[in-house]
Length: 407
Image 1 (cartoon, one colour):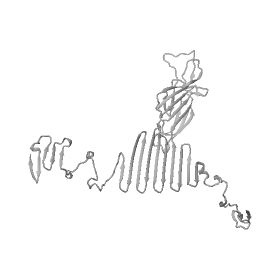
Image 2 (cartoon, helix red, strand yellow; image 1 turned 135 degrees about the vertical axis):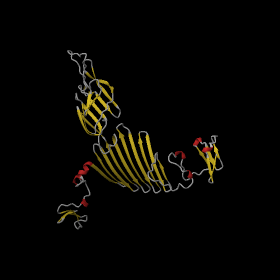
Image 3 (spheres, one colour; image 1 turned 60 degrees about the vertical axis):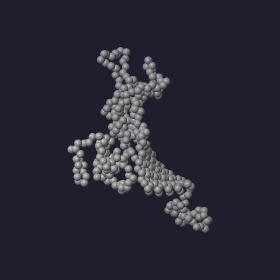
Image 4 (cartoon, helix red, strand yellow; image 1 turned 30 degrees about the vertical axis):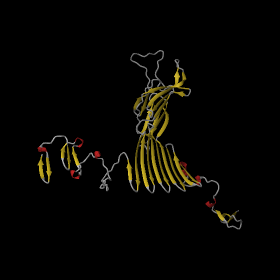
């Protein structure tokens, strides 16, 4: 039941005797506790409109868990943050996937900005019956001994001219066109012929493509702004290149970064990974993980480039710490307090390759002088010259109780 009062719009579920709960005041303010049906346009919520034009946020409640997801996406980058909570576990995930390439199209001249120094990834030039067309003679003209027919297949990147080596023009017929393709990833440059020409000069579509392989040009882009043009012809072009941004520390086309934290009553586990797709199409993958329980802490760092993989691990319990890596570097003073107990430490003498060992610290039953080719062996009871030759008296001296003997 509704009733209008002197203070606003009231509501009573017990009839006209009340009590009445105020849903709207006289000055037009609405009690939000009574908004229980329908949908509210987020554009009416001050402060959220601008941010939600770029960021999508979702909060989901159900009988088993709660999920919060926030993501943002534009032409080059996609970001995601997610939190999920249930009665047994809390998990968090953050993703950032960045595309580091840009493709632009134009006619005759392309101007690209924010380029990374190096080669473009792809360059396409499309036929139009004019581009790279070779010169021909009319019936009334001839070539002298010192003259040759002209025509070129030059393109210019900034101030440098590159000859593509294309021997015939690129043609177009009924929506089908010949195409020059430069592919940095594949390491190839070629012309794809799709249009043929008869002896009378008529064009027709080839039944199958013909490939003309060219010498791979060493295209060079400078950092920042570049201009690519066909000096003597006009044609449609398309270029794909790597753009500068915060993640361009290698010549790569894509970077994918992820981090995860998972927490239960028994364990906390975190993981961070980074995948880099290089301009050659190779995948460089780095990942680190830390797992912690009440009894153990385990960490692992792994990097994989192609088929080569490097891993280092640290495993710690209350009783021991184990470090496993291809290289272990210790900087500074290193103190080992338990080396005094016999059998607790083993050092391979073959690996002692620098410094000196003081003779007053050598305790042995037999001492061989000369290594594997020892000439002399000294024991507690005898001195033996293993080479079978006694040194000359002037070069041999023994000392016992401060008395010297010459041999």
